[in-house]
Image 1 (spheres, rainbow, N blue to C red):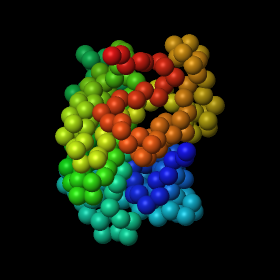
Image 2 (image 1 turned 60 degrees about the vertical axis):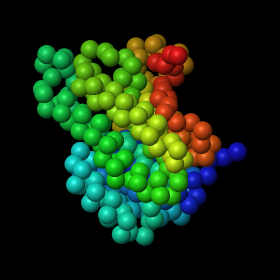
Image 3 (image 1 turned 30 degrees about the horizontal axis):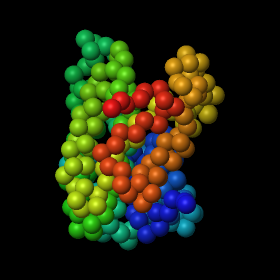
Length: 254
């Protein structure tokens, strides 16, 4: 048993980011062709495209503002005009970064940015790409959520609000499109080790690790593995799920 995404095309938003680039490489290694979405890092997108092509896959880099529906529709048209084929798998990974503080001190624009990059991104991607999935009677929508959505710690309010709103969109969408053989799921990483940590030698954090049943932080590759699984036919009967990939640091209950 192995993950085979041959013949599929996956769009990953925020693909040049710390987690996105590993997801792109992983889905490419599983056989998928990759659409590399980026917002501003064109150089990294080009580099990632070369990496995916070196795997023997087709790759296409495209710029878009995922908070702007017109920009997402333009991205859809650019993909359609490329030689990469229709999008079968969408991974909503992009999110606006901002400085966390208390509710009383958090600027209002940060709540707007999280709503745009979590909730509206999810709606924009669904409106743009799910109709094609319906026509093909196949599709995978995968949202990257967070363990913070269950923690609700001080300072997390804008991020949590955006991700909990995103959760609602994904759960409703799962019920609306399931009859078309489209699955809709979320992966919720914990505080994940990425290339930035490796470069800064900051992989360890004992205070955080003590709260995790597995007593360590997860890695970007472990997040990407969960995404690859949900993108595959091995997960064909899983939909509407919020899947924590955080060593048990948060545990959804029944």
